[in-house]
Length: 190
Image 1 (cartoon, rainbow, N blue to C red):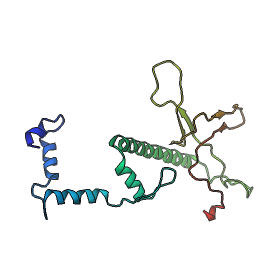
Image 2 (image 1 turned 180 degrees about the vertical axis):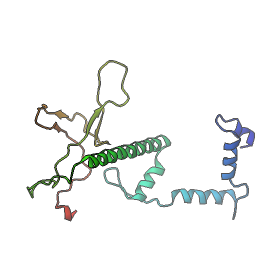
Image 3 (image 1 turned 90 degrees about the horizontal axis):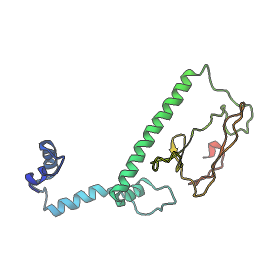
Image 4 (image 1 turned 45 degrees about the horizontal axis):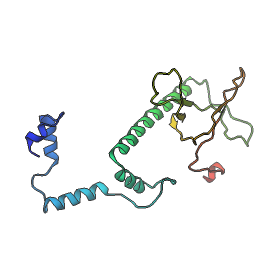
C-alpha cells in the first residue's frame, strides 16, 4: 500500500504510518519477500505442538497451536477473559492480604487430623450473575457462575441450591459443576 492509501484508513496518522513502515522491510534481507514471509510465519508459529483435545489441559505448545488456529474474535474473547481473570486474582489477593493484616494472630488450627484443612475454613465467594442483561424487564436471569472470581461452567439444567440462611450458621450453596480433573490423595502425594 502507498502512504496515501494507509493515511486514508481511519485512525492512521503520520505516527502510525511511521511505525507501520518501520515494521515492513523495504528490502528483504537474505532473499525475496516470499522467503521473508516464510521466516515470519515460522517465527509466529514457533513453539506449536500438535495433539491434545478440548477435554484435556493442553501443553503450552498445544495451547499456542489452538490460539494460532482460532479466529480473531475468539482470540480477543480469550484475551479479554485472561485480563478479567488477572484483575479478579489481584482483587482476591488484595482482599486476603487485607484480611491477614487485620488478623490479631496466626490462623486457628483444627484439632481434627482428618479435617480437609488445618486452618479455620473460610467460605468461598459465590457469584451467580447475569452477564449482558436482556431488555430491562426487571428480572435477573443468571447465566454465569463464579467461585472466588473464577468463571465456572455449569451443566445445562443443573440446579444451584442456596440453603436456608440461619443466624448462627454460615451460608451454604450446593452446586453441580463440570470437573476437568478430580484428585483424591494425601496432600504430599499430589
